[in-house]
Structures are given as structure tokens and as C-alpha cells.
Length: 132
Image (tube, rainbow, N blue to C red; front, side, top):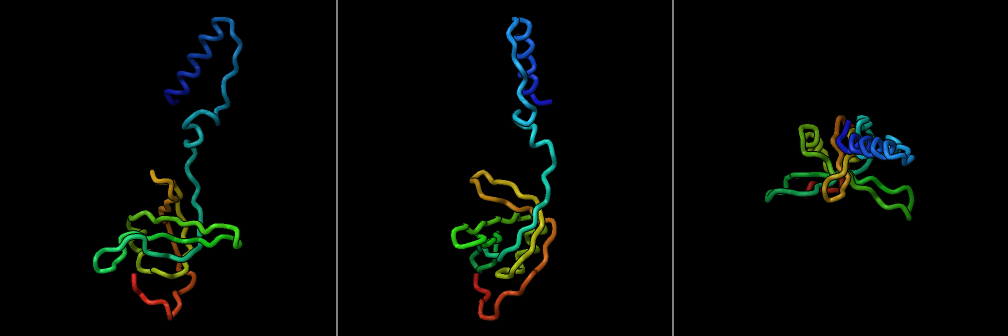
């Protein structure tokens, strides 16, 4: 039980003892309660692009760009976590990728994808060079 939840219970007890009627807030509105459920994996399909590169042009980080449903819908970028799976994924720049993993938001508000598994849906076009 979180500290905020305990404080809410204490305040409600004090109000009740003072004869003031109050009902507790629903558990779903209390901070941290919704985060107790483990996140569910999501699957995204899009093109893998470099985000950062070193001096030789090797990717240091990548993102998957998912196209919007139509012209009025924005594309969505999922920045890939740089872990073992993320590094493995970097070999497939400019390919259409189907990636499954956990989505979170980084401190800057960008979507982060911690990839659990992926497949290359379609190889990159021949006229697209390997320049980063």
C-alpha cells in the first residue's frame, strides 16, 4: 500500500471521527494504483531509422517510424531502448520491422520501445543506400 493511500485512509478516519461524511476516492484514481498492473506488450510495424550515429556513421540509437493511418494522422516514432535486442535490431536499418515490446515514455516525453522480439517484414529497397 502506498504512502499516499495510507494518508488518504488516515484523513478519512479523522473526518469520520469528527462526524464529517466523506467517501474514499476510487482506487483507480490514487497515484500508483494503475501502475501496479504489469504493462502489456505492444506490436508496432514501421521503418527503422538511425537516431544517433558515431563519427564513422554507425548507429548508436534507432527509432521505428510508424506511418499514420491517413494524411491527417501523424507518424509515430518509437525510440528503441539500447539493450541487447535493440543493438541486434540496429543491423536492419531502413527495413520494415515488426517489433513487439513494452512501451514507456522517457523524461523528454518520447515513446520508448523495449523490444522483446522482432521480425524483418520487408527488406529495404535496393536504391536506398546504407548511409547513416
